[in-house]
Length: 65
Image (cartoon, rainbow, N blue to C red; front, side, top):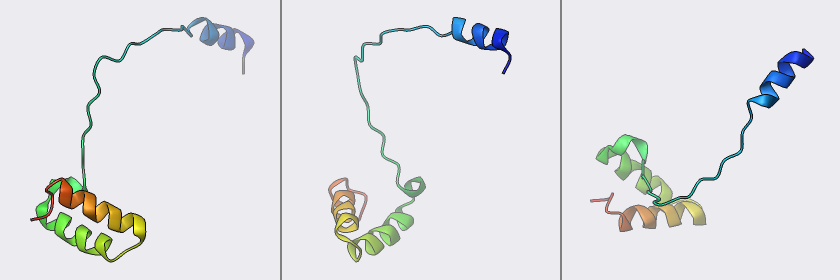
């Protein structure tokens, strides 16, 4: 890499501090299609311990009807 290019890039780096005032969580499981949730839930419920935990989580979120 050209040394002048490197110097220009380094000159553009600035430090800053950010104070987080709010944190939001979004949940997206398979495009929010109810029929897909049902199929995924069935697969997870029969899967590994972690997958079974996800199936329970989906139930608690009300994604399974």
